[in-house]
Length: 476
Ligand SMILES: Cc1cc2nc3c(=O)[nH]c(=O)nc-3n(C[C@H](O)[C@H](O)[C@H](O)COP(=O)(O)OP(=O)(O)OC[C@H]3O[C@@H](n4cnc5c(N)ncnc54)[C@H](O)[C@@H]3O)c2cc1C
Image 1: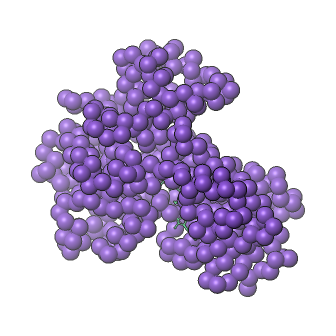
Image 2: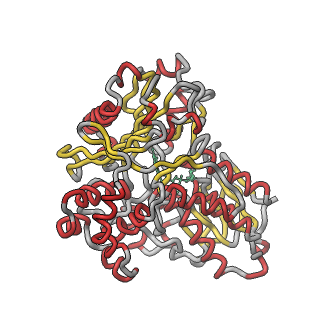
């Protein structure tokens, strides 16, 4: 039965079961709110979802990818053959390359531990692919000692200084501090941290905040055992076990707004009333379900104009790899590519090649990779061809007989890797919207980190905000 307006007091609606929606749902359930999550797909996790190669069909695969702004411009052999020969049997693959920034101190682990939940996250330090081999880890202890005094001064800056640095592009910072390896570090990590190649658009403050983790000596990247799905499944079970509701295959068609207050939603022609409405959908799409007449014109224009980030990813299934590579992650930079930012940064990750991740059949080695590009470049076949060649070349530097060892390869290209790019001229909106009781969360909004970390942190910030604004009796 659906609650009418007057009984909506402690009821919260979340639109979308992405990582942010599920995190908020779990926290708010813990705090004693009555949470209902409506998700348009019949799978949970949003862009952080995993696909089961045992049951996946070619048609379903293409459909799911397209709903999340991903397509497969290339594959080896053809997609048809991969599915006809059931080559994905025994694999768990995500929409595209995923690692979680922060390793052992990632926000995923922190959030789950607050809910008394845990999942195994395999971690790696980061190496660097050189023209003639690789360096692992990229930063040796000697490097850290050498660059530490210079970078420490910046990293230990007060938040007020950091805020000023937020507006300084990396190009300027590199000109000032970037010599030798320090230059390489700033050029590569700032791009990897933001998923943007153009250093003019990357904020120095944002990069330095993220680099603090590296110098703390943590493993900078991690990947969950049994795939990314482990995170959303754990959060969803928590919500359901604690009285929250998740409704897959229920598309929210409209947010009901009256007198500048969000009061309910419409799903399948039925009205449902809530105290607060939290949208986890891409902010650019907010006005598809919320009438823009309720919002200031500038706000509508700004949200609609926000740009995401893009990339070409790759999944390689290999027959054999050098055991030294298993479990490790590597960054690379390719100079003078002609794409936006000219140099392109990417990553090749062997964490998933470890049998412990459970993402591939035994003696099959799954390697994931990505190279950064803009959303427009991710739709341009010619640019994608260049990027594919770079990915293959970089992997070949680590595995010289790559062609011989490849069982299959898939190259997913995405133009909404991050919902909104965290760049100097593309400022993310606040969680609180101009409409009362309507909030936005996810990787599109202002919150620390990018990607999964940003999404999770936005949910944490929202919960703190709601605790302050809602009546105490509903809090535990
Ligand atoms: C190929 C690829 C690679 C990536 N790699 C990384 C990585 O390595 N590291 C990293 O940190 N991040 C990575 N990301 C980004 C990361 O996946 C996202 O930042 C994160 O999953 C976003 O979560 P979210 O909760 O903000 O939104 P989403 O995952 O987009 O969730 C939104 C949910 O809302 C649902 N929805 C939309 N409209 C409606 C409606 N009207 N009614 C009901 N439900 C609706 C959607 O179906 C979806 O489930 C990658 C993304 C992609 C696509």
